[in-house]
Length: 284
Image 1 (tube, one colour):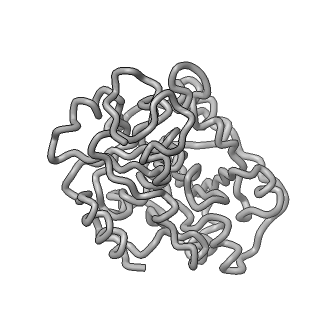
Image 2: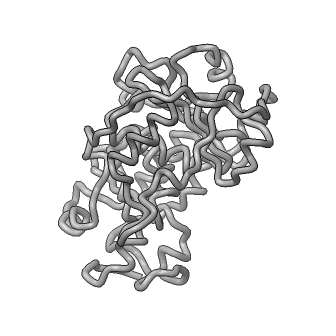
């Protein structure tokens, strides 16, 4: 894989690991006390079947509000404070997130941390599939977190973008929308929303197409991805909003764009909000 540019790395020299960490690299750092490894699987049985030694389990549903007109929105800060205190997060913790699906829920966790201004984090490239592919040791014993007193704040609001902001920016040549859904959802042939289709001008790269199926669902070669995205009209100097149905798949495309050095923002409402409102422009 082509190495990311320096701009794609975290700016903090104090970070223990790079943004995208390989299994062997993480394995060498498992004894570091400031590491907090979090497994956010789609299939809850995945954690019990085997996880990175020392990793704690997080139910992905805690990363979304779960109720109200936009259930995929960010939870209230009080809820996030309770969640991250229960997980044992501190300001000095370096979080490593992974999952069992190639990065969607792990990236949603990292996007939430970025929103809170907690930039000490990494993604285990390929998640548990890559860990197993590297024949590294697994644990089947659950790890209990050491609770902390973490006070969540939205310190980096630019990381997210709202429906109304997108509407205002649709004719801005320095703004673009990356739709991470399937082509059938994008074209309006599939979906369960009041309105089907896509945001006018949005470009479609399915989140699955950013994964390398030959390499245990790791992020695909950076140079290839940049070439493909630029051919679609997405360039590093633009501001790019990314969405799916619930900002789960698009959390991964947010992370991929960030790793490539793009200026990414996540639309938490996603099509679940856009496609159910009557005041949003739609193309098919």
